[in-house]
Image (cartoon, rainbow, N blue to C red; front, side, top):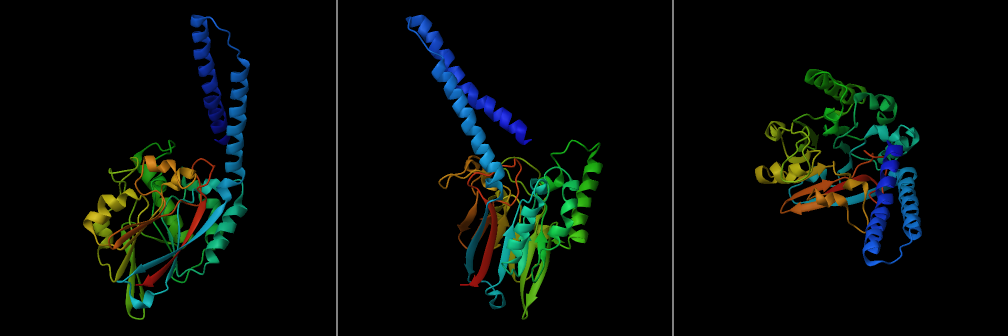
Length: 327
């Protein structure tokens, strides 16, 4: 994939000076002046070399550069027993990212554990194409440690909608169930599929709610809508935190239909490019990365640890450390 991307990018950037030269050449014939090709040729070569250098940096260095972002999240309704509660939020592992370097995933896991989390929340996209991507990483991911465990949801890629290897819808659904079983039974995670899990401390409760990927039409790009928010909220107690892979869900359903104070999402990757605070993800998403606040409701979008295309430029892999505080 990387070689193919490099070839395509090389062709695209090389063609630009060629088009410019052709236009100048045609004009020179009309107005009878000479036109040298050399400068346009050198420009093509220079652009290709520059583009390949950027890709090489993003592949060998950028995709494994890690940011550990600390967030102090204060809310007046937080139960006193959860004042100081620490959530480590991770997202979008896309485990095939690490096929050429398993040690980097181990390093990420070690960095997560070093934060001493009370809970780890993973907001989806364990794999990119197929469940087989996850199997080699059972031992590494099984080492994730948090006092109250790991909570996860399924993202759009986890529904394996980008694979062409399935002969029928049932075969695809069976593979999704295999992936879900892997998370629950092999990794020991609390996979929440339109469900919730109540955590109790000193008689007070915090409920972690999780929905299957729910794509909403107000932003982003069409993927799959399998979330059932009202089902997931049934029986919730105390303070509520929602895990929902696609941040478009926040404006699409969470804000207009609920009073959930904190939603955690991923999905955007910040387009794996972020320069001077700007990301191309803003062309598709309203909420691309970081914290967003609307009244008493907040959304945090994590840009992920893995990649779809194995290149990151500025939008570094992210571990978010969220310390809950009573306002």
